[in-house]
Length: 154
Image (tube, rainbow, N blue to C red; front, side, top):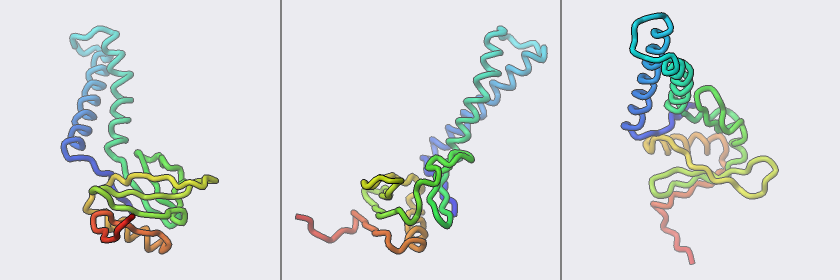
């Protein structure tokens, strides 16, 4: 199942606007090299053609950031690149914690004995859905909701 990374709506819109502006800059640079009369120097056009496409690709990759839960792993994708590299096995997840309106998981990675804590940045409305999915795949995961905690720690 796929969970889109959560950005504030203004940031998401800004990412797409930046991508459009960068693609526009690329087009202007290409038009200059196609001898369309545009008031640019050769250096400015070269900069537009070389830098704008790369920045637009990076921008769009971040705009498409998402998590994917498959049968064995929790994966974080930037575009088509798995950032976690399959290192977050569902069988290695120890805890899911909701605290201060955020979701965290702790998991064991590789040969390490200490758990790694990672924030899960998805829409808060989908926290329960992701938690339920992960626990259905690994019932040993311990869930803790700090907002509804009635225990007393001493």
